[in-house]
Length: 201
Image (cartoon, rainbow, N blue to C red; front, top):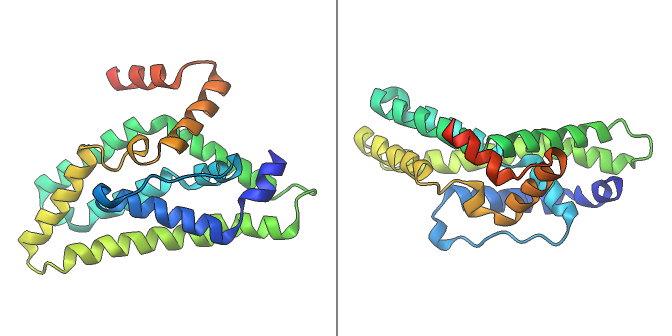
């Protein structure tokens, strides 16, 4: 893993990846292209920021206009909860990857510039791009002007969550497979079987 870490944390590459991921998830899938990775290093870097980054954007989106419409707020909270349930194992695995990255900061064998890239990814790049994608969606909602129309646009976004258009499995099958492999290797169980059990509980 140290070899992977030293290759994965190119600030530009990760920023481009992250921006592409959120753009795919936040806008029409009809014009989206699935992400491609050139190495396990890139998958590892992607796993550190997704799907938690998407969760943060969706959470902020739901809170944007929901207070003005109790039914919309209920709808949004319900569908976000369902999204989290569908991504529970991936969210846990992403957190594990981030812990591995953070642990690398204490490694005496890791180059100083690589450590700086880790900090930059987690503390600067990720938050900035989350903010940028949320702002893009906020502007899209607010530019319609009339409150009733804004509520409608928010409702449309929430329906997209319900329809699975923001799901990792739909938008990034390569990263999904990488997560599945890690989960299976650690647990000795099929990730698909575990998710099915979670869904029916």
